[in-house]
Image 1 (tube, rainbow, N blue to C red):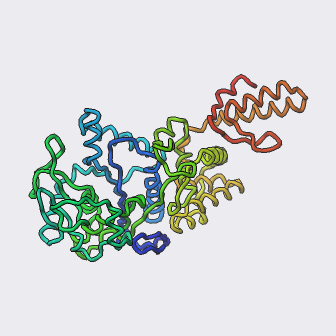
Image 2: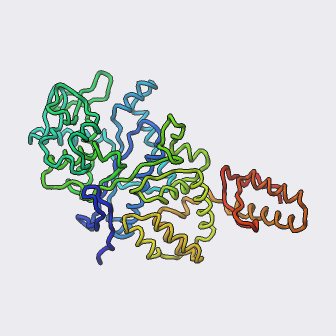
Image 3: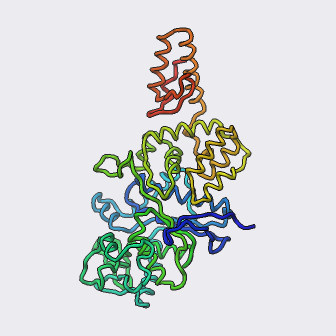
Amino acid sequence: MAAPTIRLRNSLTRRVEDFAPLDPEDVRLYLCGPTVYDRAHLGNARNVILFDLLFQLLRHDYGADRVTYVRNFTDVDDKIIARAEETGRAIGDITRETTEWYLDDMAALGTLAPTHMPRATDHIGDMIAMIEGLVASGHAYVAEGHALFSVGSYEGYGKLSGRTVEDMIAGARVEVAPFKRDPMDFVLWKPSAEGEPGWDSPFGHGRPGWHIECSAMSKALLGTSFDIHGGGNDLMFPHHENERAQSCCADPGAGFAQVWLHNEMLLVEGRKMSKSLGNFFTVRDLLDKGVPGEVIRFVFLSTHYAKPMDWTEAKAREAEGTLRKWRALAGEGGAPDPAVLAALRDDLNAPGAIAELHRLAKAGDGASLKASAALLGLLGDEMGAWVDSGDDALVEAVLSARIEARAAKDWGRADALRDGLLAAGVVVTDGKGRGWEAGPGFDPAKLEGLV
């Protein structure tokens, strides 16, 4: 039986298209992963959640054992070398620690582990072999210890990003170097200074450029042609443009990635996230402040991936209130609702799927609600530790006690209970005093002893 049709926004064609995997028995996707030298900031999580949503949907439609998902770690990079010099720590110690941080933080957001998580340093031989082939075919050249890709040798350069040569030169912030034949040519291999990580190669002792690693790792694990490649839209140029060029030249006719999926960027309270604006924070910062990973995930999914997403505290509070209500209602034994599946198959329309979850909750269909939410990585038992059913019962007991105090005209008691609710971060949401949601600093422990 054929799998249902999924439609995806392909950056290469600039259209939303029916997705047709090269091999329905082995659907393959690749996501550019992190450079491991520090904590993942909040914007880093958006494409991870996007690809996790895609992974979950493909596993549902094609079968869990028929989907291969690769997300790499860049563990050799100038930023890592700089961090080692700043701190005096060994590069290996930094990359091991930050890799574990990343895995812990992404797991806290409810993401499944990819099928493969290769490290760049484990594929240096694959990179050298690919560069050798590019040099032999005339698509790359060696100069002063560098191997460089000759952009002019590939007619399709610029097709992915849709940029002119002038735009590309400006966007790439190209390094003017006397050994380059053309300013747009980019580094495949570069010399390593004394004390820096390096490997012997036909081009000299050195290390790979950034772009070649994903081409080599995707080829090693997914083949020369695979289905979906993605990342944030900031990677479309130059990183993905360069990846595509070198891969298509290394294996002519193979095609590399068939679909390119890019998510838009993140804002915080309506402004670009920036350390200078004081609105820059990591996933761990939010988790440590007590924002549950499931709440973070819900907020991200509430905006379509192709639109800029604005993280606000108000959205987080609303998401927490919604998830608490849904978790109280969720039941077992249901099946995913067809309308939820239809929304997800329509270009991963998570906001549309969430609207359908609200419909199921309003109808009181707890079993379908839980089964459908699972497709979005929500309401799973493993993500529910942040919600204590005793907390809800305690809040509702205090609300009831306040209603009784007001009915008895015991205003002192009613005011004390109101103040206790405010101190615990409980926001009363209706005029009758019974509806509520978790507000900033929600801490039900502060209600103990009030009733």
